[in-house]
Image 1 (cartoon, rainbow, N blue to C red):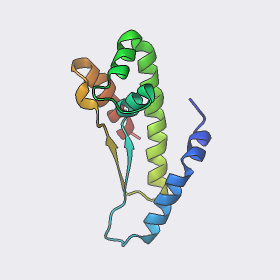
Image 2: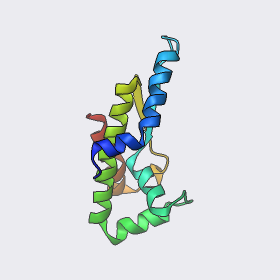
Image 3: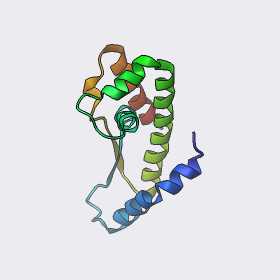
Image 4: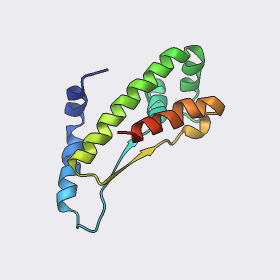
Length: 123
């Protein structure tokens, strides 16, 4: 995985925006940070765009589960860094959006939606 510094350098405009909003919002207004969940991010990475059925991600997962699992792990690590930095910048809560988790079935749902979300919430 890229060093944390590289991730944070690329995402510094997001963190600066969170810092500004944190200062400027009324105290009674909560600032919520967010990120795409690892499965959803992976589907966009693999296809290069959104698809109706996330077919390219499902095909990659079926063809090489170990490589796909490694990709999800890397995205999970990056997501943890990203959300942690949003909190450090002033977000009071963070949310994962897994727009495409509904396309996962059975053990895949547990492995690629639930487990990464659980790991992200531990940090």
